[in-house]
Image (cartoon, rainbow, N blue to C red; front, side, top):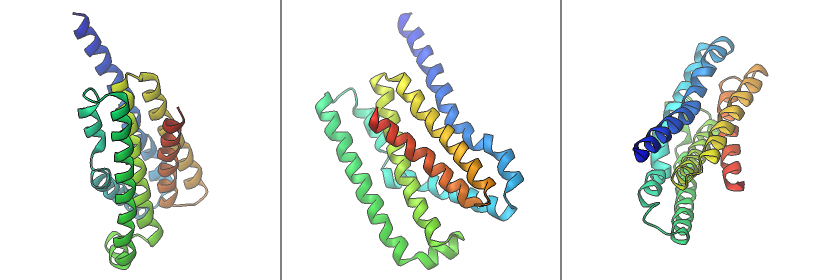
Length: 193
């Protein structure tokens, strides 16, 4: 009975905390649809879709691998495993720059993004890989407080920065840099804690 209670409490906690991140774009919809043109909002939606598609490509779903091997590996082996995953994600992110540089005109025309937007996709995708891996480590280490802090920081910084940038007439790029700021700060907080 105690195990079922623990399972229930854990499920409720992680569902609630994960909902914070999922609600961030939804919470921004009324604001963004008011302050962005239809064209800019469409570009923002396209940008998010491309990032969502590339996250498993750049991160190779290491967050899931960490979840699978967390209990099997000892602390030292897990540290090496996570560090290796970080190096591989960094290598893939760096290698992703080459096709963007070579095909930036074609990709830019196809995605309706300028070169800065194309590189922002890679940057945000790379940060998300680290963000999700940090969350997986926290979850399996039983670090609920840290898990919640990382999620909360990401959402709060994303919302605040996005609102500030969009209100300063940054257009859909303000959404990009707002989201990037939130994820990057959350990754830095995770590394610091």
